Length: 112
Length: 113
Image 1: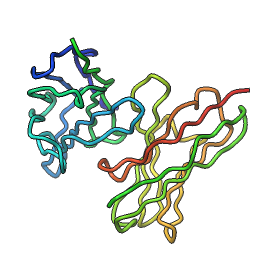
Image 2: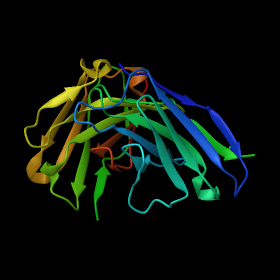
Image 3: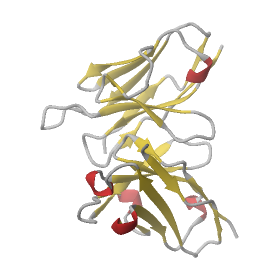
């Protein structure tokens, strides 16, 4: 199975500040069709995960442009600029290139 | 709007079975696969597998090949997750998700004697 190593585990931030979360995969996430299936989710307490970024860098409908995704191959990053209170929660990366699909262990974004 | 509405919380004893439902609305049910994800209390997300909503063919991750069954009632736009011979470690919230985009609200399953 592809192992997704997500760092950091906890990320204290100040409101208005910037946050960066990394996800590294144990093998390339480039599919045979040329696409890279790496996605980012935010899960707020007591809620289901919500899709933020799909296929590395595409913002899902309604996601503010404060969220951006980048990366390639095995190394991916989610950046959040101008952090707002509603951005706090648990962030997960997911690879859906190789079955079984696998999640990173999560990053808790919390106030400093 | 697209919605996935799951059935309510369950309290079961070890060895029992249960069936969770996930009713989809706002789109053509058979146009998208349905995924299932497990989240143990205080833990991260674990991918369980998916079901092809056109053919009904399920595909399971290794940890979920034994006692877990994905099924459909296409006429009702509903997917089901059945768990047989429940164990304490099945205590978790289970989510259905349309492909990787829209998610149900989750169903809390508690297994306790």
